[in-house]
Image: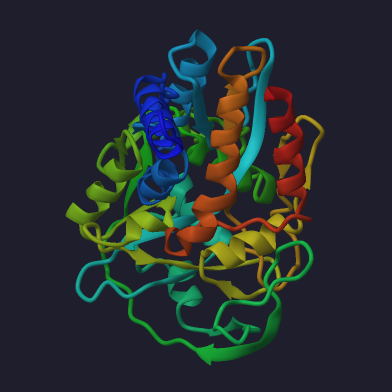
Length: 377
């Protein structure tokens, strides 16, 4: 047999061997939990699949569902917008995402965005302010307001400091004049257990304990300072973020809370500027959420505590954390760690329009996330 023929036969044998060699099985992870990240997970999925070959059909019906799924083993990993107070053995809770809880409105007509103080918002959701022409809402929208101008890089992106917080270039003051509708307010809240509700009611309780007299809870009705069923015309419950957004879309003169992605089509809701403790009117965004994150503290177990009353110029006061939940010690744990690492490090960065903050390597959230993730490897 000549040398050329030997090479051809060897090459053919190699090709046959490779053709019948076992191929690594692509994983399809069972994942779910917080509905706040539905849009982010959908936006991120194609790049994740291309990079890993794996898939995760995300079932975002609420943080409570995610906690339960990890506890009983029906989910490989989950996301929750509130810290799990009763984790199972070997469970990790890693702060995967930071994002602003936006106050979304439908005030009828042109539906222009409002400016509201944190106190006004707390009173609206507590049922203490029940009309759009209330003097406190009118005052918030007929006064000079200070807004933030960020420093920019050459490519137009916002400059960040070592903590990943945006750098404020300057402020500008504008005078607002607005007539508010003489209509009652309809409040849409999350009727299912929700980490979004937990984050918002925690901010209310910490900022205004005399108004929000009960501690934060995943159940909005439980944290509510009174009987939420007493006025069903004023308060209406709906299950998830999309449900409350749909409710506000269909109901003129209504208000709710969700992440900023639920303001865009098909909901087309107005995003409220919130006056923070520094007196500045802040638009909820990935940048203003990262400003709040830079003022927060992160415990050894991954739990985040926000400084809701910080005087930092551009901190958005209603900022939330989404925790990644998974259990260490399983055969899939190392692979799940790689998946969560990809999602946290790439999804927010690649999809800024979804409103989630992108971590820098030196950010306390990023460090805590990696510390918790290492327990899975």
